[in-house]
Amino acid sequence: MKKILYVIIGLCCTTMLNAQSVIGAWEAITTSENGESMRNVVIFAQGYQVLSTYEAKSGKFVHTNGGTWEMKGDTMTETVEFHTDDPQKVGSSVSFKVKITENTFEIPESGLKFSRIDDGSPGKLQGPWLMSGRVREGKIQTRDTNRPRKTMKILSGTRFQWIAYNTETKQFMGTGGGTYTTENGKYTENIEFFSRDDTKAGMSLEFNYEIVDGNWHHSGFSSKGDPMHEIWSMRE
Image (cartoon, rainbow, N blue to C red; front, side, top):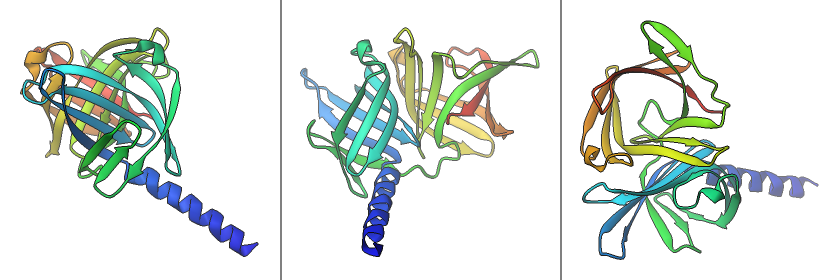
């Protein structure tokens, strides 16, 4: 009986370690049909992930997909919440084998092999967030984060990506991402791709940020120069 118990505990620990080791950001460089170097970046936060592809040189956006994920042994299961190439996949789940080492994440059946960018550190805002409100004229306006229309932002230790989508209509509204830093109350985004306007690639935007009652307050000016004060809540 003890031997069986030890085996079960060992299997559980292995599963937990595999799931934990994937947290962070990963990158694979591929080449498009016209010879362009493509960056494929995936961010794993606890329970949620996003994969994006864009041209390495120009930042031209190509594709994104993502949603929830879980690991059992060496099998990962993802349930799609958004998919720019095939919206009909929204709501579906797919399982596949993965190989994870300290510095590589591989999906053998696809031939893709990612190299680790970070392990979820040192970012103070690492995790999945949902926009839960705005501050306008000094008044907080909240929004229901359980509704189908969502704006999610996923951050690793050094990278960020936001995605606007609707799980009910399967509509994708937009996304953008790149690297970020958090220093002295300032949150700075360095944009590497922006689906609505490729010319935004290369911009850096600085915002004020603070955590208030567990919520992330994010204020400053948008990429269009408009004043903004957003409130984000950690997604469970």
